[in-house]
Image (cartoon, rainbow, N blue to C red; front, side, top):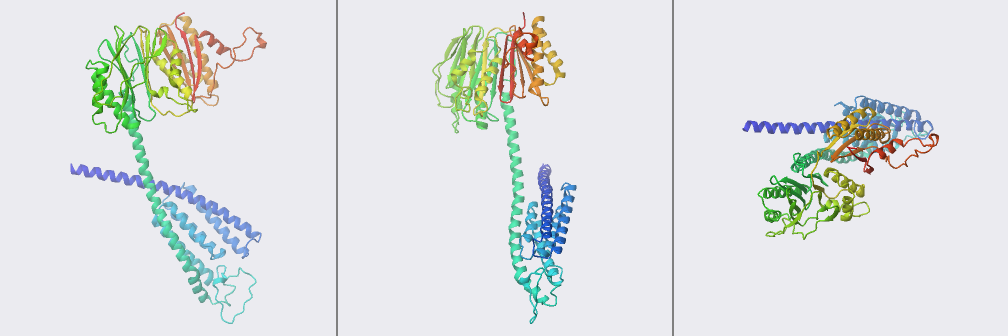
Length: 627
């Protein structure tokens, strides 16, 4: 046991060390390429110096400056070229590049003058990019030594321009200097080399040493902090990835806890039900549920937990589980809410609460008993009249221990429909700050085809909400449930996604023809539907994706003897219905080109509608499959 634990600890340490090594290596590669870019720019600067010297811009020995600057430009180009050739991916590159910079500085030091301290600092500042304190200190020492050597060669060996600030003349010597760029070789008989060198060490090299030491300390600290920063960033990135993974997993768990397989009860032909939930964050507090209490009773629930994120999702799981468990004991909605409320109040220190609506429907008699715990009133469509099922709502769940909920009853008739929702629907807000509201919801439901299946009903309502909201951000979870109490034929939604290219047309038509055959569509309807589908699919291929192919989703749902077909693509905005119908009575030479195919679609189908939602084009059409 101890050995296994030890191995795990060692393995974890080795993995962490490997990650840090990889991070440092990635940074080193980037730093090599960064220094290479600086070298390339430096070569250009050196060539600019050469050009200016040719025009006599500098009061120094022109030939000497041109020679040194050309050497610097060549060195810089060699360093940049080698780094780019190896793409920065060699361990020795950092030493090679920094030594080149020190070499360039050393050579330039002999002609530009001893007061240009920036040249001393530059290689040190570049070394910081490697985030290594050791390299930074090493470059600092080498740069200082290189400066000392360069100045020694300049003063004592006559290999550079003399700085008159440090010259020590031999007593009694009179010198007439016409050229300010004279070297120690030119003045060897007139100056005291030994005294000049000592004078330079004290008056120039010592201040430069102090300056370089200060710069080295600062750059060393920056290098260390940079190293710590990249490890900190790596840790934060790892933490963010872990949180993202956990949220994705939580979202998946939450989604799988809700009924999401449709048709939910394929063996039941006496009702239709469908529900959706779209969280505002990765996980949300809304939930819906529906389940058979026994063979004749169906329970439907919708609820909204206060708050968002993980806490609300955890509270949602508890509330949903308690409600379902108590319902399966055969309790009425009011008693279920009363007991669940008391249980949720226990230990609810964070102060979360749940608004909920629950109904239990006797599928034989149509009698529905329901209770409301502070939730939005459902919309009911009864005898063709749409209204809100208002009742006096009780207090929220988990809000007041000991609260007794009231129960209400409603007699449903065949054809009646119930729509449940959370406030994410009615409180959806557009860019102008307007709420979608209860009136818009009622008008939307009122305008929906009464024979449309529940899945299509929710799809239409969601489209209407999305169109109203536009590009505004979704701030609240959006949850809906539709229930239709009426006998159903085979009712299912079929959907497939195809490449939006003409070559896929035969697959689209085969998909539609198979579904039409299974639902016993007659020959006339099949012909009209497939012709219309062909026209719309080809239109999307050519007009929605004019530059490169995309995807198009084709969906079909059947209700009684009617088919609803929708095509969704992510192409450019394209409304095939916006153009006027062609004048088919006009002479052939007077007719405008195009538009006849869409005209045939509109004439052969019972209804056609286009919507643009975000980046999607949506075209919906319907037709009877018999006659």
